[in-house]
Image (cartoon, rainbow, N blue to C red; front, side):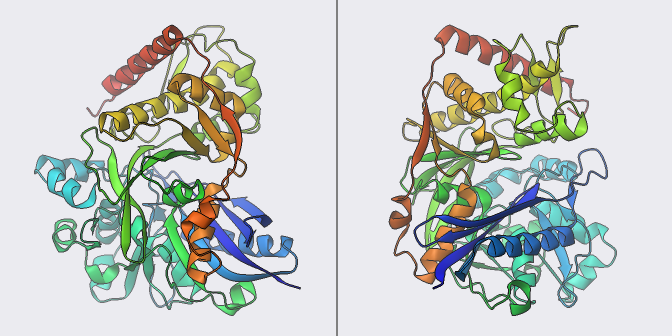
Length: 497
């Protein structure tokens, strides 16, 4: 007897995870694969969109194969946000590598727009700041630097979108060019108040609207898969940017609830309900989710480098063999021995928004070793989280009593305890840390009628471990003071400032 289930596709920055999730929320099948990161120039980050596509289909098939006797009745997609693909509508082929959200190639263009006084109006409409992190200047760069792209775009031959749009186009065999409101809200082109592509912003960034996808609710009809891909025709019923999907996966559906995801980057989002709060501390106002035409908003702080720092130690320096090794190495030290890492490899995100900052290490001595480097990388993520939550508090967000965490780094118990200590707040880790995929699944299940409401899904959330703060105020303030000195020194050093 077959079991009705949902396939959740979590297409992340460094890899793709697929889960098969049953009606009761249990994980019936799982598969994962990394893909290649490309760094063609300093500050540039690209992906091969076809490699992402091939990886996604392969991992989806593997997840379905590991879940025996299931009937996949819907698909939900979560994706790395802001990353942009420009492709040929007829051949489905990208015309250039995908430009990743971490990419900084359009920093100067953002500075020109800021100096010309455009940031205030952009922020009012989109809730975002002028930064190369977001999609609009990436799209403009592609149109201006790929030979013939702008002419072909105006002729209707090309399409553009975030990774979800590219996957939808290929999953449906070129029938559906769409995105959801959360992904649209990260482009600098979408008015989060009117919930539509903004004509003035399209004109400012010189992007034809015909190039862009249709914007739909997070739980909506996104077409059907080509039967040759996954063995049958399956409706695609839910889409959300990965961080918004994780917010749902963490059951943060009431105003004031907050989660922080620790993956390649770190993203803390607090649900603000129907109110689009305007930040005075350089945080982002964004769409948390849109259901049945009703928008729920959030305030977000983005850290560009979290798990990527450990990945750099593993792949760039070769000083560790696996990310799991980092917990043991950090715990082997009784203190950080005065070593601080500012992992600004692709600039600094909130609340600094400094695209020119670059990574730095402080406090090195002759006896500094691998354990010190690893611990400084893990601690840096926690210090940056403090920066984000302090900015939220200063923006009059309701009192944050606890922080729900997820993502790969959340499995590191030493780091989560340090996070609780340096935040001076309890940290909650759920039984399932793959909350991005769970959030995507909840949207698909909602649209498919498997669940009746998000409340029904939220009731399944369970705490696995609660980390209570256990650090003196003096130690906490000393560590944070040294961290701020390190950040200031890093930003001062930048040759482009």
